[in-house]
Image (cartoon, rainbow, N blue to C red; front, side, top):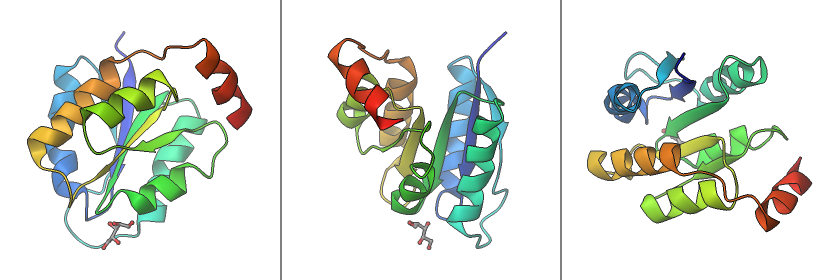
Amino acid sequence: MSETVAIAADHGGFELKSILVPELRALGFSVLDLGTTNGGAVDYPDMAERLTAAMREGQAARGVLICGSGIGMSIAVNRHRELRGALVHDALTARLARQHNDANVLVLGGRLLGSELAKDCLKTFFTTPFEGGRHARRVAKLS
Ligand code: RB5
């Protein structure tokens, strides 16, 4: 059975979410799309809450959050001790978020990234393993 990845966005991330959902499927994941479903204004903490609740209930072990800048979603997801959201801007930060921080939520700025750059971040994030070792000790201290 394929791993489920949860995804949620506000209106600032809706367009990018619609581009990344098929990309996640192409990477072999089942997608739990928690909205938003159109470009109407919604509040990013409410959309983040949908995803964090789904992850805390065990519906998905990893997720993607998108708002206009990525900053609001990043603040929201990191209020939960067991979740590690990483706001990334390119493949390098996506790779480091996985290798060093074992990030389990990819956070993107929908108004800041072009679609090809965002796809690159997504693919890198979901295909890069955690390095463990000294990083595991540090990550454990977070939660
Ligand atoms: C919405 O206009 C915008 O503030 C939101 O998408 C996000 O960028 C907040 O951090």
